[in-house]
Image 1 (cartoon, rainbow, N blue to C red):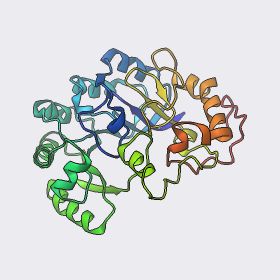
Image 2 (image 1 turned 90 degrees about the vertical axis):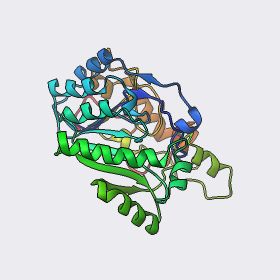
Image 3 (image 1 turned 45 degrees about the vertical axis):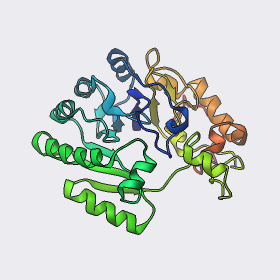
Image 4 (image 1 turned 180 degrees about the horizontal axis):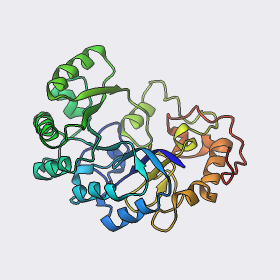
Length: 301
């Protein structure tokens, strides 16, 4: 079996309250995945290949004090990993640890999140309490460490910016640091400040709102794996706890993928998604409409 994406949330929570993230209203207490749990979870991913493995979702990866050691553990896995990725908000300035991260030589993609229209004021508003000066300093030091210790690592950003002018400004800022900007739009995620504000305004509600047709989104349909800081397996990466399909501490991925909890969750999406508190409000949908409800995941399709 081959996984398209495996996301392991080694840090729950964050020091920021970005308006597009569920943490902006959930405000969870920061917790770290213990390194032994992390090791057990990796050992229970019983596949031959993983296209992309990332050590983040909604938490701030660089807050984990054992991150370099966790990266080195990836060298010892039985499955082949085509791309190892970590992401940061660039506001954790533990530069000694940052150098150790690049020295592992295992990171294929190093991503920085930086939203807004390319002005300091807008960046700090959308990612409160982030500071623009800290972002710029981080970009320069990350580029230096990449060049010194891991030149094969690709530096990218994920930047929510929907205007041509803003994207032009971001390119002028990022390209001297050798960061390639990836521009995306806001996705309406449940519990984010932005989604809450839209629901209380006269704006058109997001496409995935309570009037959504019953459907199975592609995150759930495809061979993906999303693991939370405590080992619990989440159906998708759009909210910290949509449902629990199992736990990688005591179950293998193949068992969870074929398990009753996942089958039940998919059946609920197809039959009654509009009444599911989180999935009814999520914009990710559209794929998987023609899947039969009684899916037997023990058989190859």
